[in-house]
Length: 135
Image (cartoon, rainbow, N blue to C red; front, side):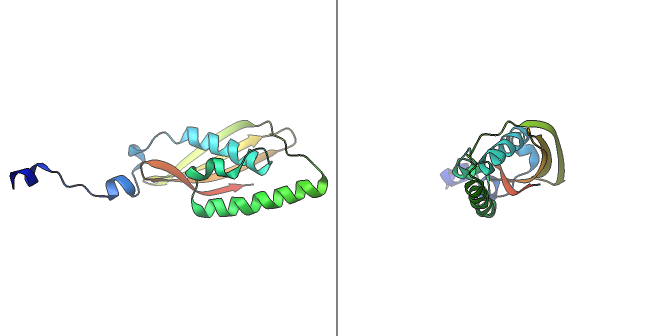
């Protein structure tokens, strides 16, 4: 019985559930990297699988469809896939709830300026994108 008293109880949610923002790493590097990667994926210069661990299944499915459309469009126009030159102009973040970050990133490319909206949720001690929209 004395042995049982030495073991502390733990709640699985402390490790595998939603985490508070303070318990998670700085989200800005992930926001920057995900934005760059998503733009490169849509341009055909990077594989979607490279960011699979940082995005939800729903985001993966939606991006996969969009990648297919972009590849078909490039094929019809006979345009090769190229890595776009990207400059991040600004990042704005908002925390609507504990463990949730919503970000808007303005990206400049040679031909245009685009906005990328992301929602990150703290799950399993890391950030994971549950929504990504490229406008």
